[in-house]
Image 1: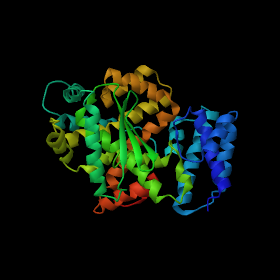
Image 2: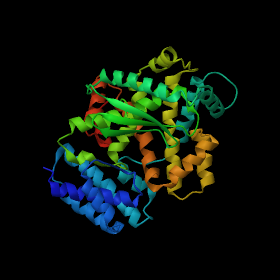
Image 3: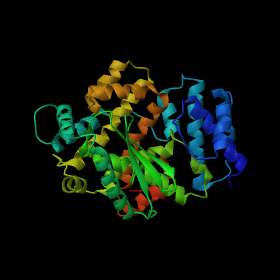
Image 4: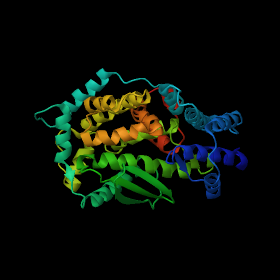
Length: 385
């Protein structure tokens, strides 16, 4: 049993670490007086936080999957505290401890294969794969005044399709907001959420379902909502450190979310038939190839962790991730943050793990498990496909 005293110590530790990271590395729905107490105190030295992580790990009060979840969270929090105390810790080893997966550079031949698949899936045309991808994105640009309504229609469709996979509450309510930050889904409790869609650059309408499914249903908002219901008796799930193994699985689910809800060419047909976005090329194959290119982001994170100059990181992202100049500028800022630098490695590894694990005759049950149970990367690696 997780006692209130142990839970408060665990929550306080997570809040103290998140404070060192500037906030944003923790999903916290615990008592607000605990948050206020941490905000009012002097910051705790990272070396002491390392000790507190170790002490809590030695007395985790539950076993089984609950104990494994807490051990994974505390291992990640300790690794983060250790890096704060000693920035000389090798980045790849730090990321491995945080995320619970092996951290190695993605071979360039795998990225080259993704480029080849992307070139085959895009509409025919002149130029390199990068030039053709950027032309394809621009061809589907959505006017900003039309975007909120399109997102609402996509939310309604993805919620309906998620209901065909897993039972949802009757009164799901997801708001839409445009802002210059990254796309993100926020669950507010009470079956309510907000899907934030970036308007910093023209929105690619061909990515409408890809973004909405990832951030909403059956992706991040759906997962948070359903775990709020199914894990209501586990208060530790209201305090989730994000740079940790469970979020590798969450991001893998997000990257597969469109394909889960819209198998085959269903996303492309829905966009054409229901909202009038006529997408050129093979949309499912385009998104699958682009998911593989998260490996280039991971390689860029490793370069940043080694202290390589921005020009070298930018060259890698330009060549292999096929980013535009505007995207490069944002990506470099993102990768300068040690926390986000570690987090971004989870996208490719989560996508790759789930790609194999979901290729199974009992796929719907596996999706339901991801949405309702605590799952770690080790659980996927140990399960036969």
